[in-house]
Image 1 (cartoon, rainbow, N blue to C red):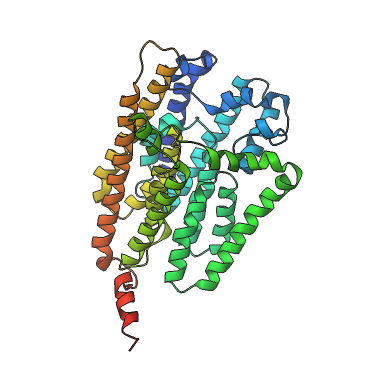
Image 2: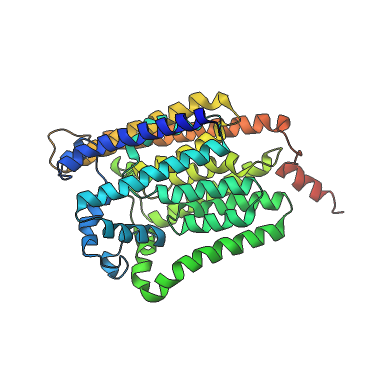
Length: 404
């Protein structure tokens, strides 16, 4: 990488992380008081959980089943380990913020290396800047992006290890096993697929097993919470409930919707006339899954933005759709905090109806971006570099001809 590129990367990284820190500093100066932290959109889980989970007492974060942290193991280890370089919830936030800023710089380096054309959009995205220090998501995001990068370069074993690490940090990246399986199946690399699944699963198990054996109830708390949670902030289901739509059997309905989306994604994948890279289809599967999840936190944009930039690498015509989607994310970022402010004693805030509409608008802009990606890839398939592939319908019809 040239010196000029390194300087640009460093400047934009510093700009984004410092702007984000300035936003959160308002809350730090006021000890994250309520409703001020919602009014000024600077709430963070980091100091909140330091107090609520008793992290300052240095207890192992999975030792108390009812107050165990609601995160997978690596995130829990980070939460616990950083208490030893902190003496208060403010210093705990600052210590974690420094580590997150370093992770963001490393993420930009990786994105610059893998997709050099539009990496700068990440530190320039307002919703990304506003969300950097809400939670520990970047610990999982960088290993997720690394897994995609290595997979597309044929280093499958290392990719599988990084994906296992990412799933052990935050559970979201498990969704990538579907496109990975489809890609390797389409390439007729079934043995490579079996090895990939085995390595990723083993990596995840090696990380989780010590906690499973020593504090099983605390370890299970994260999974139990997500299985049993009702419609929560930011989700399609919560927005519909605010608008008076009855949601009986939410778990069953959300699962069926999720499975339908996965099936639709598989059909779309086989309709492509080329074998796509993982980077080219990752945004679609992640964005679709978060759209029907039972919760959508504002920092989830940190997961989607790098994947969106990977898609832009080969299609500048998606620029407008990208910024429309970012506009929806930014609007939601403001809406969630103002809605929470209205519930916590603020004089002004966003009503239930207004928040529901902001949520639905965010989902609509995401769906629009996905639709534009799908449209481009279906149209550009014939011109795509690489070996042409038959579509699913062609395969089914040709297979039928073999029978008398």
